Length: 255
Ligand SMILES: C[S@@+](CC[C@H](N)C(=O)[O-])C[C@H]1O[C@@H](n2cnc3c(N)ncnc32)[C@H](O)[C@@H]1O
Picture 1 (cartoon, rainbow, N blue to C red):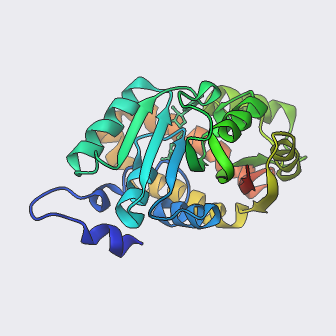
Picture 2: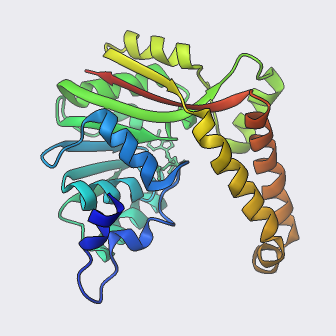
């Protein structure tokens, strides 16, 4: 998939693949997008919605590699605007549109999409039943939702839940089973739920180690206070994953 996306580079111009190292705001990079897209059955003719689209990285990866059209919805105005600019810069504006909008009130008519994807976005949304209901509303009957998100294990203490909410805007974290139940209640069938903590753990550990190895440079650019704060927050998060209290899940279901 990386090769297919790279081949589309017009001479002398920035290509989508030039950004993939920087514009994927989830764990596992473009490989994780590829796996999710396979779970959802994304094809060239699929109309794809990316909920909580961030800077539009996953949307551009899919459009460049699979040739499909992707609409992204992103709550943060600055991120939505940056996504539009980056998409223009790499020449994908005909295939990818990122609009500013709320996953809880998707600005689209019913049955407008064949596939709905989301990566590490739903953790920020307290009303998960409402978000899943919106995904179902905009999907064609038979359309597929696939997403990845953090999951909480039973051992995660109330105080840790609260710290995750305050420090990382992580709210109403679900378990594998409770997400499975929510998908069923939202009307999705053929529900799949997989624990992917083992895939995330090395990614998270490597990210923390990279941060610590690059401390001198980070302090020079952003100051010691910022470097220490990041270390404390991300270290806390990685510690929870290492302790088996927090992890990741990959989910899919048919509308
Ligand atoms: C961790 S980022 C993931 C971005 C993107 N999915 C990716 O993988 O590159 C989560 C994104 O969700 C967005 N978000 C949070 N709440 C949202 C909501 N209610 N509706 C739409 N986007 C939301 C945030 O602004 C943020 O850009």
